[in-house]
Image (cartoon, rainbow, N blue to C red; front, side):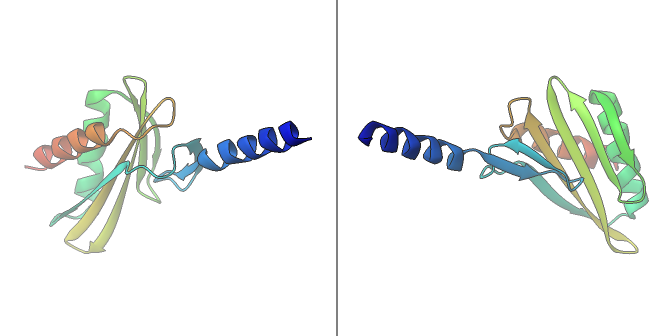
Length: 125
């Protein structure tokens, strides 16, 4: 009986350490929930210009898997990693972008998100 309680407590503890995270598209995926996996940047550009620069950057680096023009989100695969990008318009001439990257096992990849954020900024010049 004591072994059963110990094993049950361990299984409950393991289940509580695994979790889910939310993508920029609004979907929920299984992975490490408490890791910083996105970069936010603000630009004095219209959202349409930022969206096109992000799309061109994703196509250049990998494979574009989904594009939602209404919600202004993009999804791509780059070297066995999944990326999501969301563009929000703050004002008519100001917008912000969220670049989120995860590895195939669900771990955050902040370095890739940062690199793509820089590439998008350079493409806006």
